[in-house]
Length: 322
Image (cartoon, rainbow, N blue to C red; front, side):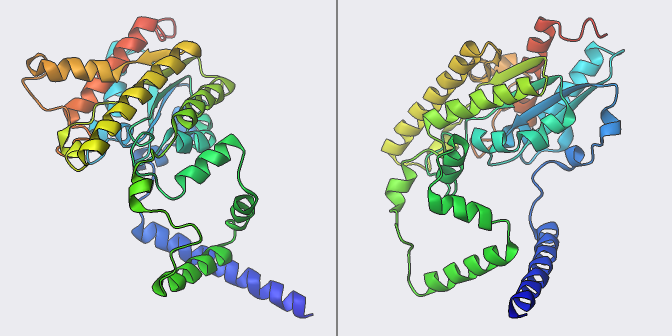
């Protein structure tokens, strides 16, 4: 009897906390995907050629209207080039995402749309020095080598009662000065990229495998857009040098994976480098990078759309369909 009462109380608490957390999330937390993507229904995509753009805040179009994100601009270009063809370009970018996170949400945010083409653009967050606390766990989960306590914790995380008790216990312990069982100094943590080079390569390879399993006829990997001085100025001289080397190396990984996996490469790093060296050749000196040195202006997003569009046209993907 006591066990049944305890189980009933647990279920009541679980349901109440789930409802409460959903209300909090809707009221205060930013929704991951753009609203225009969340509003899409399967019937909206019926009889259309579907392109999914999977990536981070560059794909999302951080701080820009939806119409200025590169997926929306790409859709406009394709509609003008193939007026008789119905094409849907779906923005599956989420700010702060790594390739590991993108691979984890592939079924929900890519395969669900049954796309004909997938464009993958990650790297800026993957190579960013100063990993987030869960990044190493997510990478180990992708590899399938979680520690036993992490496997247990992953199962328990389905319970909102557990999550609430865990968070409040940790908060109370931190207030008493507890720093955790294995405190890590800020300096040592900042020297680690969010995703290791091996993990980044594996995530890209798995994304390509998932796209092929989903029946995609064309798969594109895009190198990173450049990061400029306002971003690097926040780093120390040694960290800046290492950060630049890591970004260069991760772009090499993207090119290698595209070649080894026989998928299409959109070399945004090279395209932006050329335009930044000769800005007068692109819309009267309009800046491509935002003031934070990481995100893009509308013109930067337009350059991505143009590069992808030219690759699509070169492959003649939609000429027969048109």
